[in-house]
Structure formats: C-alpha cells, structure tokens
Image (cartoon, rainbow, N blue to C red; front, side):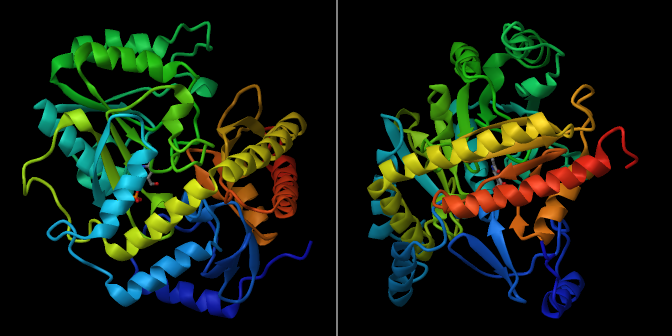
Length: 445
Ligand SMILES: Cc1ncc(COP(=O)(O)O)c(C=O)c1O
C-alpha cells in the first residue's frame, strides 16, 4: 500500500492556521479538506480518503444528495436570513411540521438554534422554567456541548471544564458502561446497580428529588466512547424520573437522525422523553439545532429565549430538503443501514477474536465503536494503540475519529458503497494489525 504524503499546500495552510486560529480539538492527523464526493474526502493536495467520519456524523445521508444542494441554491436567491425568531416565514414552519411527524405522539413545539450546545442550552432553560426546579442531573462521561449550561452537564474530560466553572446546579451519576462497570459488576446479574445508586445516593443524600428539573441523557454516549446501555436501562431510569416528576431530556445530537437505524436513538430503548435535542445531521450539512418539547409542557413567555440566527432560512432549506429526502427514502435507508451495520459488526468481531488490543466492539446501526486495550484480561485503555490505528489508517487513506479514552468511532454515511466499505475495513484491519504488533501490553510501547 503506498502511503499518503501530506503535500506542500496542506503543510502551508496548517502553519498559517496555527498563527491565527485558536486551539480547539484538532491534531489527530493533518487533514486539510477541500471537498467530499461520494464515499471520499479529498484534501487540498488531491489526496483521497475513504470516509468513516461523515465529518462527525453530519453527512449521514452522504455527500451527493442533489435535492439538498438545489434547495440551498434556490433559497440563496430568495433570502438567507429572515430573523425567524422576530419575523414569520413559512419554510421553518413547514420544516417543523415535517419534523414533528417523526416525533412520538403528542409532540410538541420546536425552538431552532444553530448547534448542539445551543439546543441543549435551550432544553435546560426550558426544563428549569416549566418545573421551577433548580437542579439538572446527567451522566459522567457525557458530552452535551461547550457553552456554560451544556458544559455544566458535560462530563467526559476534565480539560473541557477546567477553569470554566463552577457549575453548582448539576449532579452527575455513572453511565451504564458495562464493559467497564463503575460498580465492578456484570449485567444482568447486577440488577442495575447503577440505577439503585441513583436512588440511594444523589437522590437521597445530595438533593431532594423535588428539586431536580430534568435528567439529560445521551441514548448512546458519543464523545464519551460510543457506549451502548443495556436494552432496559432507560426504562428503569424513566421509572425513577416519573416517580418524582423529573423531566427527561434526550440529547440526540450525535446518535439521532437515523444513525442507529431509527430516527431517534432513544427509540431503541422503548422510552419517550419530554424534550429532545438535535443538531449535526439535521441541518443537511449546514448549522442547525432543534429543541423539541412535549406539547403539554406549554410555551415560554415572549422574550424568554431566542437567537438571531435561529431558524436561519438557508440552514432550514437544507434541513427541510434533507428531511424530505430521508422520509421519501426511509425504507431503503433503513435497509442500507442494517446491511452495512452487519458487515461492519461481523468484521469487527473477527478483529476482536484475532487481535489482543481490540477489547470491545459495540454499537447500533451505523454508530459503532471499537475500544482498544493493552490486553483483553486487564482491559487497561490503550491510547497509544488507538492513536496508532487512527494514524496508520489515515496515511493509508481512511478517515476515522476517536472517542472516549481509547475508542475509535465508525460512522460512515448511510449510502457508502459496499465495495468502499469493505476497502475501508481492510485498511482498518491492517492498521489494527500494525498497532497490535507494536502496542500490545507484552510489547514495549
Ligand atoms: C451528544 C452531543 N450533544 C451535543 C453536542 C454539541 O454539539 P455542537 O458541537 O454542535 O455544539 C455534541 C457534539 O459532538 C454531541 O455529540
């Protein structure tokens, strides 16, 4: 396999970037993107990469949906921005009507914003407003965004919170991360020790349940490591919340929009939330956040919440065309996700059998994670192996993203061709083989 070489143009742009752009979360590998087309991302020097990242689960539907591009072009000629939180326009209303048809019965109303963090920010404010309660509960290892309200409930890496606090109105509890159970138990013998903990400790000893406005969840933890709870977990959690009138906020920003094969990832767990948040893929490639609230919660008073670009017409045009495309092609998309998911899972299970560093493989639909360990027995996270897999795969023409401490996410578009998918999995296997022979616990790191 000839390795990709980073060209002069990319190197030059990276140097300039470092002088003028603030540090964020980059530095996995030097990808300077120019375009994406079909199954591939191209960099500025013409290098071509198979895409298992969908630019962080945004291009779920793929890159070449002509209906989305046409809708953007048409709207461009009419108006890009219509101050939708101040004035009326039909497009966001039509999109809201379409979106609500995919939500559980009885929903509701929508607030549009520009990102996942804003969608969660609004959800938290709305929950506090209607309940007149102070506290929000959430999970360790969760990611809900980086503005103050969403950051308060985020708890996946302490660098994300350091020096930005304090966050006095939030209580975190352990997520059902069964591969690394915080209570050192195994499911189902544990009888949901993590649920018992919530009842026995925070809700008895830290805060009165009547003071808790909402519990915010990711149905599958994304940034935290692609962690899938047991099937009945959320039903058990919902039981406690219902007992105390605590609202359930479901953050579908990463796991939603069909990523798991269902429009809402929480539907895999047969539970309905009171407030849903969406972003990433919902904008069809443009920035859009949505906070969707249950009808019987009511409405906010005028002026309590708004955003200049909320309901931006260009974003909504893309989102509406994307959603229409998704609805019109739902059966085929569902079939495609199932087929691709089983190809990936089968291959990853084989890798787990074959290589010591592959500790766990998990996921639903096309939201799949591979967790790397130093040895299967100790399960010690193997960050070096994970990073080596990402890097090796990148230089062999495959783009993937990390998650959690030592996990890689596999989130291709729903229409990636089966041939390309298999080629990508071949590159992944070569990279795992390389990392296994260099970074197993019996090798010197
Ligand atoms: C589950 C979840 N919620 C919220 C966010 C924040 O979204 P944004 O980066 O659009 O603010 C993310 C981003 O990765 C996410 O994965």
